View 1 (cartoon, rainbow, N blue to C red):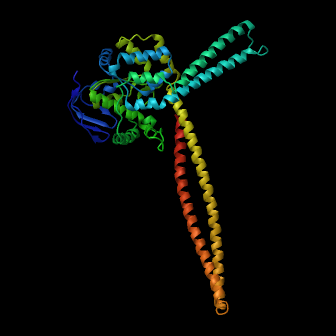
View 2 (view 1 turned 30 degrees about the vertical axis):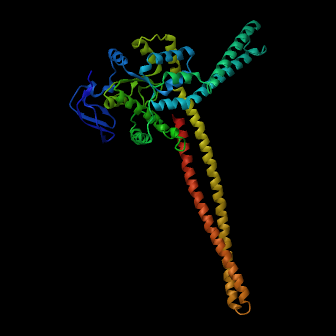
View 3 (view 1 turned 60 degrees about the horizontal axis):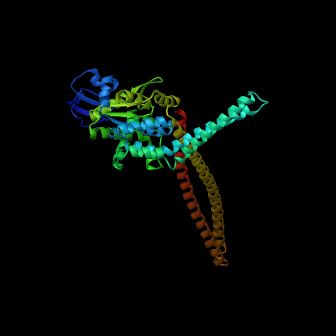
Amino acid sequence: MDRRLGATRFFYLGREAPLPALKYSVIYIPGVVVFSAGGGMRNMFPGHFKGSEVEVKEVWKSCLFVFDANIILNLYRYSDSTRQEFFNIFEKFKDRIWIPNRAAEEFLINRASVIASQEKTYDDAIKGVDELKKSLESPRKQPFVSKEVMSQAESFFERLLSELSENKDVLANRVSDDEIKASVSEVFEGCVGEPYDDESIKKIIEEGDQRYAHKIPPGYKDAGKGDVNGSVFERTRKYGDLIVWKQILDKAVNDSVDVVLVTDDKKEDWWEKSGHRTIGPRPELVEEFFVTTGRTFQMYQADRFLVLARENLDEEVSEEIVDEVRGFSEDSDNWISDYLKEEERVRLQAAVEFFGSALDDRKFKMNKLREELHDLRSLKECKESEMNALSNKKEVHQLKDGMSLMKDYTAAWGEVNHIASSIDDTKLEIQKLKDEVYTLSNEFQVNVSKLEGLDDD
């Protein structure tokens, strides 16, 4: 189907931009206006209309499947059989799978944190089983359990604790010897996008600030993330989703291909929601994709992707696997995000404590210097009084003790000059500390605001 249409002028974020001549008429995105000849509602607002089953099946025949970092990171959470099912799909459609460069970077950077979060899950489970076992062992405390049943239970507890410990050890070893990372690297060999250069990143940041101010998806829900003093990745973290989105758009344009994005990000800057119900991808995303590429964009969470893979790709995915993936999804809206948020909270709390301590230190030094400045000024006044007294004496005893008084006067004058110089130096030190206090206060407040923002999410 020819999607090209004759639009005369195209404005995006207030700037006129080129648009491929498309067949459909008018498309609206916040910050976007396209002027063209008339058309129907479905053509004017494609983001608000789902494709039919036939249209979906047609797209899936030749589309590019794009996987977000959270889909790959979730492989560490699934059972072996479910993880293998994903790898089966990756292998079967290896020529049609792709990861944006930014998503691949996020996977590699966050991998160790995800493994650590899973280790904690095992620690909590082991602790819970051990506490239950101990609560049942006492013959003199309720709940009472017969010796026969307790004997059977103890055998079960031992096997359970042993298996949990073994699985935890497997997880711990993945930090340095990770077969999942190796498999991901192998199956996505040649299927990872190129990184943006510094100039492209700079332009995305400038555009991102405008988009976020108007809540244009995706990414504006991450506006409080990142560390301006951190690594390049940390400094651009708030724009991570937008960078991923831009890389997807570029890939679709370069390869002239429809895209199915699979992501477990559940934030409202990706999904249109009504209450607790997710309706579909944000219409703005579908429309921006179409405006930019002239192609179709679909987006699914992992469980829905598996169901559609079964329906459209003749992939044998068991209902148990779909239920497992769906269960994890219902259990936590974004378990990776929750864990990383906790890490962010710890980091921000440490930053708040650091800047708070540094502020206290600078204020203490500044108060000490102010006391020294006060003492120096008092000493200067005393020396100036002595000089005035010497000056009067010199006039009275000009002949008799003139030389001796002159020496005393000169020495006092030297002391006054030295004290004045010390006063100037102290003033400079105080000003320097004032500047440091101002900077530290700003950093302190920024981190406090970020910390409060995390608590509000």
